[in-house]
Amino acid sequence: MTGGPRSAQRRGPTAADARLAFPSDATVPEGGYDAAESQRHLINYHRQFGDGSDNDDYYNATRAIVVAARRWRKLANERVKTVGQSMARWETLFLVAFSDDELTQSELARLISVEGPTMVRMLDLLAKEGLIERRQSASDRRVTINRITPAGLAVIEQVMGVTNGLRREVLSGIDPRRLAVCVDVLNEILGRLDAMRDEAS
Image (cartoon, rainbow, N blue to C red; front, side, top):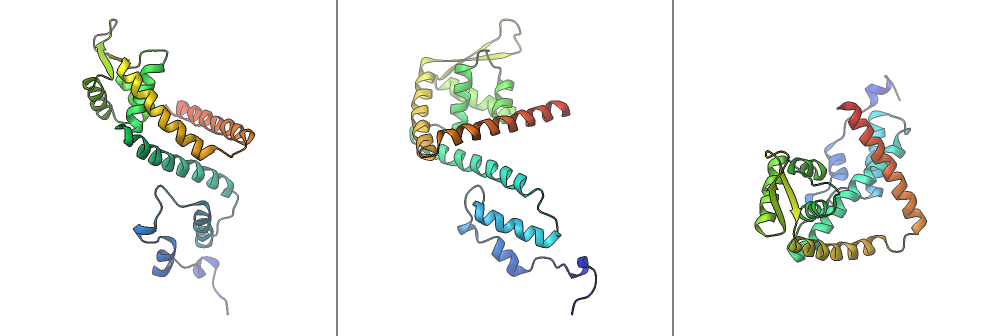
C-alpha cells in the first residue's frame, strides 16, 4: 500500500546508508572517490532529493577535474620530496624565473593561491637558501622584486626532470589527439572561470 505525497515517503539516510557511502578513513582514497563510487553517490543523491539528471554531465566533469588535480598534486609532491622540494616551492621558482615581468610577492601569492604571509615566508626561505634574490623595486621602494639565481635554475631543472617523468607515467598511452582535445576544453573552462571572476570583482 502506498499513500501520502512523495515528500512524505522520502526518508533520510540511515546509519547503514552512511556506512555504505562513507567507508572508514582507512579505505577512503586520497583526494576523492573514483568515478564508479562517485556515480553511486550521485545516484543516492537523486534518490534522496528526487532531482533529475540534467546536470549529471556537468557534475561528473567538475568532479573529475577536482579529483585529478588533488591526486596529481599529492603524487607530484611525494616525488619532488625526494629532491628536497615541494610543488609550491617549484611553482614559485618557475614563475620567478620565467615570467616576462618581475613579479612581486603579492602577485606570486595570487598566482599560486596562497596567503600573503605564507608566500613571504617561502620567499625568505628561498632567498636564504640562495635560490632567489630579493631587492627593492627601483620605481617603488615599498615593493620587493624577486629574481632567480643560478642555484634556483638548477633546482627548477632538477624538479622538472622528476615531474616530466611523472607526466610520462600518467599520460603515456593516451591518444595525443584526445589529450589535445582535453587541453582545449580545460583552457575553455579556465577562460570562463576567469571571465566570471573578473565580472565579480
